[in-house]
Amino acid sequence: MLWATGGAVAPSIEHLEESGKWPESWVPAADESRVLLVTFPPDAVFASDGFDGMAAHREQMEKLPGLAEAFEGDNPGMHTTQTLDYGVVLSGEIHLELDNGQMRKLKPKDFVVQRATRHAWRNLSAEPATVLFVLLGSK
Image (cartoon, rainbow, N blue to C red):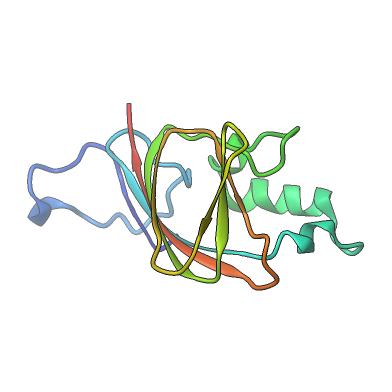
């Protein structure tokens, strides 16, 4: 997480204050925002013999509160949040899996908007992919 704003947006930008506290959730509530920089390892990492799925789940629950709970247990990677998300691929390539099973391949400088839709990010390449996200909370 690079930046977060709290609820009840101030009347002008000059009155926004930095609390110095880490947000309780990686998913913004109404009138909140988050800026995230996410590096996705290749999907093959999760299928390797040395990958400990339970340890990864525990770490995700500890380090990504609010977001970790949004992931579906029976369909790894699929999730839905009540946010408006803007994503820009900075490096690598990543596939956006949509609710209907369709996949959209995204390359550096590609831009995507998600509006509280069910989706997953899949890195089908052999290299990491980095995406900058801006999440805006909605009611």
